[in-house]
Amino acid sequence: GAVVSQHPSRVICKSGTSVKIECRSLDFQATTMFWYRQFPKQSLMLMATSNEGSKATYEQGVEKDKFLINHASLTLSTLTVTSAHPEDSSFYICSARTLKAAFFGQGTRLTVV
Amino acid sequence: QQQVKQSPQSLIVQKGGISIINCAYENTAFDYFPWYQQFPGKGPALLIAIRPDVSEKKEGRFTISFNKSAKQFSLHIMDSQPGDSATYFCAATSSNTGKLIFGQGTTLQVKP
Image 1 (cartoon, each protein chain N blue to C red):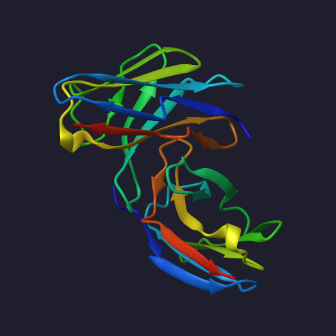
Image 2 (image 1 turned 45 degrees about the vertical axis):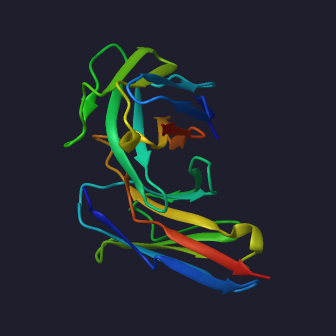
């Protein structure tokens, strides 16, 4: 299957700082990528759809000013958690689609202290 | 967003047994139904997927059964192994949006 690489896998940051997470499609181009959030022992919740060259589309209830998404190229989307707080601590996962299927990155464990 | 219901929440199966996980959806616009396997601390990995024009798809020990009229689909894991112990998610999407909507997940434990 296609490879989606996410970086970093783990990050700890101080409350009030910003954190950037990168998602790359390594062997295919993705005009659309998706960002999910997963709490412990829960399912994946779609946060936003990242569109190359245009603004991201956010799901209801997701603060677009807190979760900044940039899809600057066909192989890279970034999620920046701004002014992070402890309640933003979670597992963030990106996804990119080929014509056949959706593939996921390894996930990023964010801990805000 | 809760348009895919998955059961059971947890499942314990003996090695060599059959694991069965069920999902039901509401949105008739969904036209792609994948199953993902997730290990702790990792992203979901695609296992197998089906489109509504077929009623069954088999890949190795994994089989999806699909009932379009009932809007239900299930994953069968034959000859379950301890290495299959993981969380399994069903999902659904439509070609129009590409957004995957996930079920709640099933934690499978296969006992040796």
